[in-house]
Length: 366
View 1 (cartoon, rainbow, N blue to C red):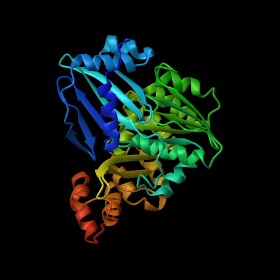
View 2: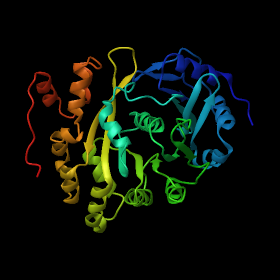
View 3: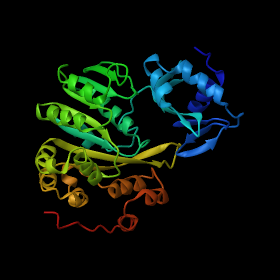
View 4: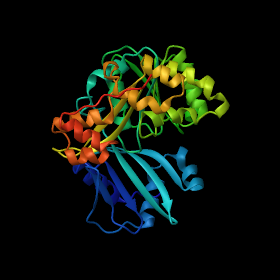
């Protein structure tokens, strides 16, 4: 095994000291740090391809070495003592190696630290069964939100929690709950196979790192129908897209029969994006929450997915919240700027009216 170049440890220390979320490394180029959502160049000599290859060979677990050799890309975790843990994606571009590190905080955050309104999240954490999806693009803070939810449960509920992660990010110390954390590629070959095995492990709560395929989602539905609470992530930009994506796992001839199952098991979708914070650096999550109440279930059963935004608008009593409603909350609280809020709003004109005290009710959803 090659000796690891010391420049990587120095770079990771620098990143953590500057509160960077990600570190971008490219052959024959200086490194870049993502700080408060913006890329900043590190004043350093360009990293050579040989140095990058040496790091991957040194740090990549042997179980994943074949992926690097055969697929020219690999995901794994890396821990630097005294600094922290990192999620690593090594890859090739134009025939040369590159790496992106994501810093994983050692302690799960709280709802308050994430600036989430905790009441709805606590409601979902105490659900007895069903599926809760945390959605958003890569890098939108989905893992942190799920970690806050599991940590809240850990300190208050006696539950057996089994996680399937790729890779494991946060480590949980058993408190009132008992955790078994399984890493894809090391502890189980795939999400689908891990899900099939998990029901024989007497879980109360199951975390699926990502809903990637039909087998995984079908098993999640079966688990929810038999009294388990399932948390998962999905890449989608909003609640309507998230629900529609679930049906993309199945052929069209099954969509009608699946609508009743999805409506009966889906408890909520939480879709989020990150916005630069006004004070202290970093970014703040803004969320859209679709609580699947009686109207939401009817909407899904009928396949009227285009009505989901209107259902969210009138569902505040159930805990639903639109992106604009959360942006309004964060702007009024001084957590984010108006300009940054407008930049991510799905309807900036409506948000502008809200900030002036004008709120229009939605109608025509039933």
